[in-house]
Length: 87
Image (tube, rainbow, N blue to C red; front, side, top):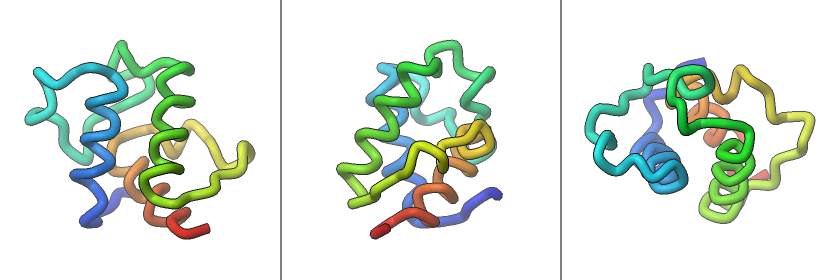
């Protein structure tokens, strides 16, 4: 579920800001692993990122839609956003 969407830069920026990893922002790609890949990306970070994504993209994400697969990589998270935009 990788994405080549134009949403990627915004999704990356949200993750970077939420985790406070501005010093690594340029090294993050769509294949960058999130859960298990970035030590800062824990369950609290998931909640914060989802909240900001909902606000920024006008999404309404049901708790049942939030799965580990969506947070596997930055690309899968971007695809998740694209799928739920405007819902």
